[in-house]
Image 1 (tube, helix red, strand yellow):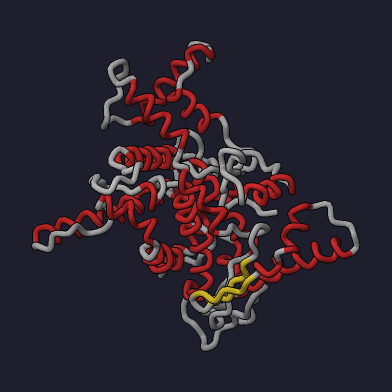
Image 2: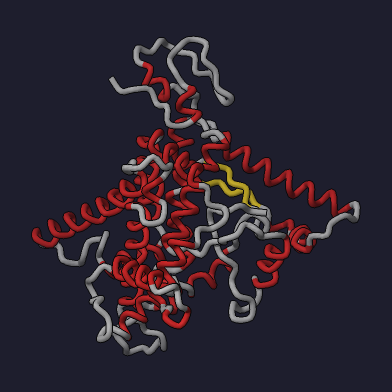
Length: 414
């Protein structure tokens, strides 16, 4: 018999005892259930209440801005711009969900996202370029562990007194993620986010497969990297050997992702909360190594890219059509697939939303992981209306004139 789920507030509050209560639904047994651990299966029919709550809160914010503007109290230029384009608000029906789309204030438009397709991971790209240029003067080869290589350089630099004249991209990179933890990171909260995933793992696993993985396969620009590397998609050969090899490769790819999650979420031999994801931990190192892999794939594909769009040139990657491989938009979409999409998948399967605290904790976990994985993320939560105004101003301007703001998909929205 499995034990009760006690890893987070909602799971711990559900039991098969008569008369139990929950802020979102009644869990009294109908009919009686023998085992306590089955309590979390007794949900109302699908209601998607947190989706409805999100929609209401967004529309309330819009109504508040409208009221302030009507009474001449608005000092937010985004409100002025946005209210003049209220026709952009739309209710989108997707997989039987009614999603309220409010651009500029809460959501990115396709036009806003397009420039992010031209940005990869500059920090990692600089590190790989440095290693390639200095390969004759370093001990790091193409197949060596770049994170371990950078760690050694970082510790030598520290022992020498952190002299600025000796700093280089490998030291910069390691020091940034070892010493420069963003001010919004709360490892206790991240630990609670891990517990949310573990407590709802069956539903979260189904969501990752059927909502995120299969759903991601329907996005041509994202799947192009997998097709080019043949890492998760089959090749053109249909003989028995090739089919068997492709299936094995696909299984290995899925196990790689599973292993990454296990490294991040498995308990560490430490009393600290989320010890594995703290600097130097197993999950922390795993995230940086995944980032190196993405950087190498990006670098390899760009070396075969047809940037001049020459008709007769044979190319593996069309940068004009697909943008930079593993770019910021694609990475942000993938991060949402593991975070917000998983929360919605749990809600669909459970027939109820997780509590607001659990959702915030889980998003905080993936915001931190996104930062480690190279998703451009705000490192100090000081964004204000002026930063949001910059989005409006830059929506019709080139990024060279108005540098792109961090996409930060799991961060707070004004």
